[in-house]
Length: 431
Ligand SMILES: *Cc1c(COP(=O)(O)O)cnc(C)c1O
Image 1 (cartoon, rainbow, N blue to C red):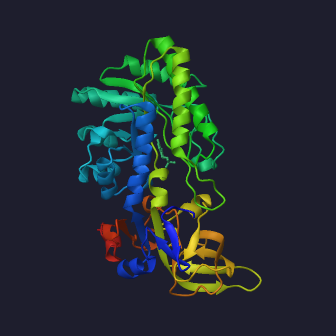
Image 2: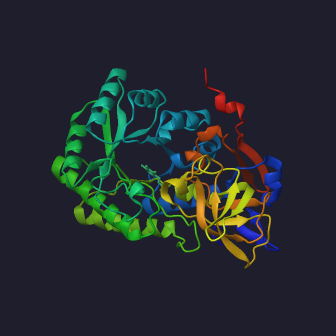
Image 3: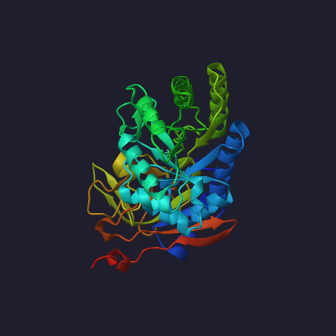
């Protein structure tokens, strides 16, 4: 099965043991359905692996850009998970949920002056600093406040993870971080050590997303630990924290492997410990930042089928009541997905369809060459699997299509975590 919480009963789709048709009828479509139990299980799996292999001071930070809403921060707090935030909006959401922001790290390659001050006002624990300009801006702001801000430096280890160009962030020419290869990583270390009101705690890197080859994570870890050792040799600075980022791969289609994050973490730990020992540095606390791997397989997206259009000799389309406004990932990256017609038993009698959204935009597609029942028709509920990461988070108000609601499932119960927007909500901020 594509996700562990997907099953079939008499050929009909079940999600987290529930009938999607009943939930679609109760809440309407499009609908983001999140399996809270699965979110918690994913968080526990990462936390156990990190605490077991790296020790108590090491932490899992949920990269909340993958899906940011109040309830997810409450769940993270309950599970002993820290969080990454990337904007004042995410900070405000976490704070509104009562999340302890000293357990957060603020990322972004260009934090605005307003962001910096907003984050410091609320006691964000760490800033991951991208470049020298930002270092100066942070030093000035923390001096003005008379505080010492904890920071880690974002380093570009020079890894090309062979993923899509748009999500490859570890290469020397990335817009993120300071590169080891060019000497900029060393220079920013010297600068950080020389400035007052900042406490340099260590380093951060994040080389990309959807990593399936543990070789990329192992190489990255080794490069970063050697860099830690080089900086100790050069400046006498011993990093207390080494943050290795996220990027753990997730399965969207049957062809993709089912990665085992815990075993990757175990292998990385072994390599880091031997590298640290060989170079004579003490093991820093390790942070990891999974986003997708916490939430992706915890959600199912439900749509209602509108028209089914067959263009003889060309293509056939299934149009749904959502699209790029609730999930722009296919339009942006051609990200593959697995779909099921929840209204019909799975059968061998499938045809290939293009799944189209409802926006006035020909690129508004959710998938192409998708096998669906030949008799799919108007009114059927179409389910998109592995729908929890970067969908709700990337939703937009294009065409003034209201954003779908987000419902969570917990131990057989269902509850609204984000209410569905109304057409009137779309003009809420217009003067
Ligand atoms: C996006 C991002 C992550 C999470 O990436 P996933 O692929 O969702 O695990 C972690 N850290 C940083 C700095 C990021 O930008």
